[in-house]
Figure 1 (cartoon, rainbow, N blue to C red):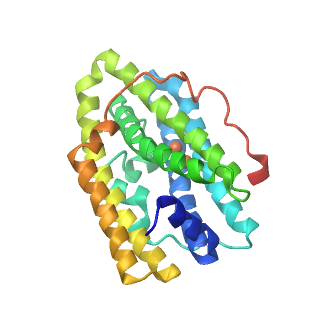
Figure 2 (figure 1 turned 60 degrees about the vertical axis):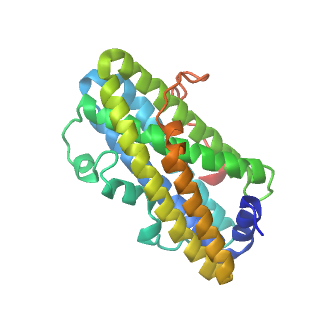
Figure 3 (figure 1 turned 60 degrees about the horizontal axis):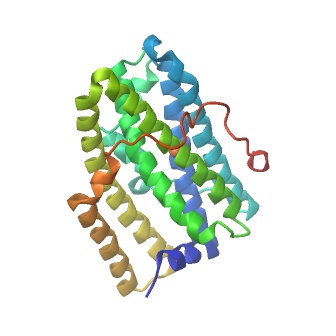
Length: 262
Ligand SMILES: [Fe+2]
Ligand SMILES: [Fe+2]
């Protein structure tokens, strides 16, 4: 009846659904950019060495937001406001995952514990981002309109994930293992719920825009629930393991520029 590929093809082919998809994606990316920018500014003195990498992480996310905006512009479209029920980043924050915006808005330095919470949040959410982009790259990596953007973002998300693994392992070696494991678990269990809720909300919106039949919408919603059931049972474990990445210091050095999307 449908595959992930045909689903995304359909979303890509229709201006209204493409507009919604890019707007939601750009919104999440720019929030991520802001969060990382603030965290890099507030890093405690003992972790100063991380600041440029966190800033680079933020610069990458801001670049992704600009890429999604540019994809819209290329088609002569403007962004639409992000419906709150599809706002993954905000919903995670509301669930108490990661660092509260209230804390990031203050000008007080973070603690080492805050930095660990931030990294655990990144470990989990970048896994999601990396898997999603990997799927898009598999299907649309050669697509004339979105292929380049998809490949670039996908490579960056892989780097973010590698960096989160590496930094968390460093903190684990320094004696923070229990805090890390506890935080990762809490974060992963909340993330899979938020991901389910956002997926249901996006599916419902896309169904309306693209005029899906009730049967099709119901089948897609059932698919989302099935993914959640699997993730709750076993899948979440993949989000809490730590392994030294092949690519070390993935965020050392400046961001790869994307002048064509500036
Ligand atoms: Fe991103
Ligand atoms: Fe990322």
